[in-house]
Amino acid sequence: MQAGLSEISIDLTEFNKLKKLLIKHEIPFEERTIDGIKGYEHHQIIYPCDGEQRKSDAVIGLGTYGYQHGLLEQMGLIPQDECLDDVQGWLDAETIFKRWAEDFGFFVKGMDI
Image 1 (cartoon, rainbow, N blue to C red):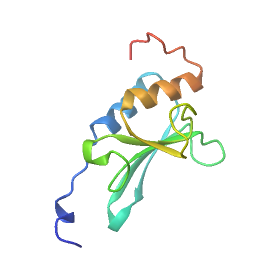
Image 2 (image 1 turned 135 degrees about the horizontal axis):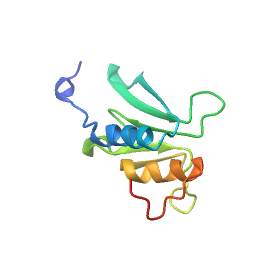
Image 3 (image 1 turned 90 degrees about the horizontal axis):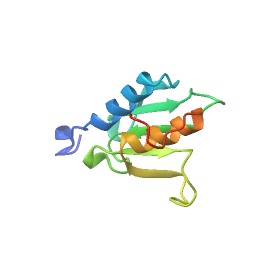
């Protein structure tokens, strides 16, 4: 392991907030821990489930966009006017939750989350 890497810790505040919002509003998801860069874990939430029904996921771990600030990286269900890439990073839990909730059929504008 390279010097300095052993001291890396990932702030999971936004990750845990997203998970709590999904549970509170009964939106289906799967949570996984996957191998990331240099053996460090990536924490992933998949909406609504893994496999062919997967529409989106959010991940945080060493090397993901925004991990240094505890922010999430999302793939899928990204508004085209916001990002032309496959993933969008530096997102908070509320932003991702609103996208997934809207896809799930919730009217989210003004929703108390």
